[in-house]
Amino acid sequence: MTHTPWQKTPFTNKYLSLQPQTAARILFVIFMLMGILVRIWQFGIVPGDIHQDEAFAGYEAYSLLHYGMDSAGYRFPVYLTVWGSGQSALNAYLMIPFIALFGPEIWAIRLPQVIVACLTLWVTYLTVRRLTNETAALCALFLLAISPWHIAMSRWGLDANFAPGFLMFGFYFFLRGLDNSRYLLLSGLMYGLSLYCYATIWPIVPLIIVLEFGYGLIAKKIRIDRWLLLSACILALLALPLMLFLLINMGLMEEIRLPFLSVPKLVQMRASEISLEGIPGKLTRLWHIIKVQSDGIPANGTEEYGIYHMGTLSFFMLGLFYCVKTTLEHWFRKEFAIEFVLLVQAGAGFVQGALIYTNIHRSNMLFIPMIMIAAIGMYYLCSLINLRYLALLAAFYLVLFISFTHYYFTDYKDLMDYYFCRGLKDAVAEATSYEGPIYYSMGQEHSRILFLSREPVTEFIETVEYYNYPSPYLVAKSFGRFCTEFDAAAPDPNATYLLSQDTDLSAFEQQGFILHTYGYYTVAHHPENSSMQ
Image 1 (cartoon, rainbow, N blue to C red):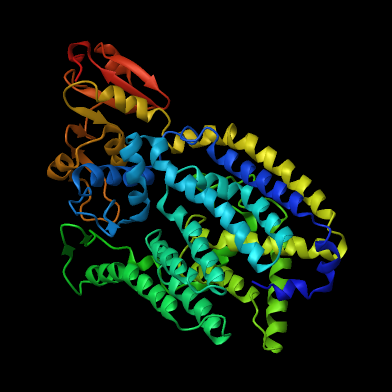
Image 2: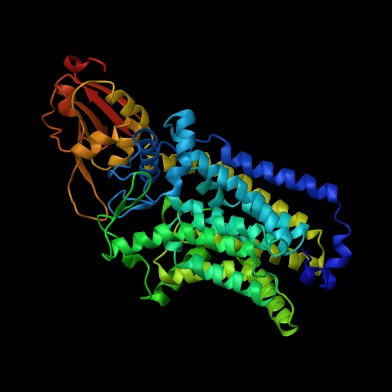
């Protein structure tokens, strides 16, 4: 692809020739290795043990693999019914091969996320290189590789965190399709799969596709041929089950149960999460998150280091100015403006922010386009002055990156130990080794217990009772031999107890229970009930 906007800009020509190809390759390898290493170091341990949403996805993957159904009895659903209001399904399906190979281990169910995240580093570099040039692409790779948000989201398996990667894959193959229409097949496939990453992007993906493909057709960069038509067919086939899902949950048709596919009806759908109401307040909330780089939710990122490090927002504003200016210049000259499709990606993120009350993981589709535009802004500024200043900026960001890495694996790890229930895995392992009923404290979420205990899904379906059915956020009262209702002042010696740290243990000690503490949890069992399963 020819990148006329950059090649025709005078401030780039005298510097690009000074960038040796060998040096660029070395920097690419260094940035990629740096990004991969910080994402896989102590992988599966930090954060630890497990988040309730990734636990439910892992349990659904385990159940689909071994029983052919999810926790609601649906065979291979297009959308999971977990919690009553559901969860996107691609995360769970990507976990299945790794559970088949390695068993239902925490690190195994996190492998799809870290693989997609590392591939996203590479694809972001390739994308910016096609949009601009090698130097700006290296800037984008570097900024994403050290991004605190992207590092943190790479290391655990939340369904929504797949959306940025698959949207980037779709965008990259769209750019490739401008030169070779065969790549539009992959673009349609990736955009279609992104719909199974997170429900809040459902109205946004069609907007991206209409603007990108429509502009490509108008500018005669895309022609209507068999590859475009096949791409549309792939996208339509992937979107169809979710369209049926919406019709079913709007009460317009009955749910679909087939031996190889299910389109389920949720206990309660959270349709109100996407609306045209309160747009000014929603945009104000989004801007606040972008500006302070935090949403106040520790699991979504670090308040101290933010989403993309200090200073990056200024480069984003500069890059945005450059992309808008260049787009307008090319429109007036009736030339193809490749920067426009990058603006579409970023603009779509802001449209999403206007439709939902957002936080970091809900708005994550915005941050990679912002980082790409920031990289362009960084390159633009240094090209106006001296490209050697890029080395000074890299040194500044490296200091921030080293500081963040130390914080992430020390203080932030300790903070996440609480939110990810450190010690619960070992506590469940001991508790399930004894016969008889198991009582567990509220707040551990039944999804964690299900995954860590490997509860047979058939038994769960037959025995589960909820406190609050129907509800979009179901809380299990009991299932199988697990129950949350017990009297800590009068423990049953025939039962095993899985207790949180705020439980009064005096009655257990007085009655001779053996207590073993794992992180934030204590297992209490009586010597009379010491027989192992």
